Image (cartoon, rainbow, N blue to C red; front, top):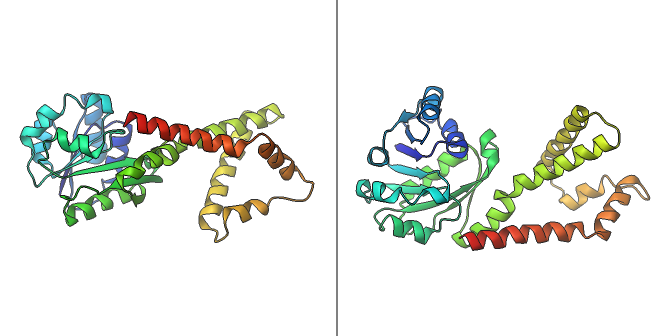
Length: 263
């Protein structure tokens, strides 16, 4: 199989790095910054291309890994090189299956994919939409295998992509915000910043692993840290009084509504 990436920036480059050990796979790439493309080629064995037409012609799967506002000039160069045996894979947020199918004149199957940023360390969560009825079974299997190299993969209907975007796509920023806030709290209360940072990061990673591997519901794991009239219940009671849970849920709904608007 041959797979080509139009865009080899943070997300595209991260996915390409996970493919370096896949056998019988040739990876092509195209990027606006030629120097970065050549550096990635040295690192991963990627084959640089000089044009969209060249990359499309050589690739069985064409991965659209650019920002949505950058795609307008791509179609006129891609479409003449497309055939029904190829497959377009889009990780460009907000571009619907219908708009993608229309843009490629329904020549080939289209798969929507949405990874979140932890794919950069092979710990991502990726949603794959296989709603296009023209996708073959080998194409479905191949694309799932490709993204399993960078973390967990979930097959979702397209009408669930806005939920995924709000909860999982935006989620890392929410987690980093909480990490940052707790680090600052430690500093305010007297810890040196590097010590507070180290401890809080381990707190989040350890708690996440505990939630992932435990058979107990997360509510029960929370209860394990609560003692009557103790420090933990004092803080949790404050959270409830100030409707922190509701605020978080409202924020995620706002992200969801924005994703719907952008789509």
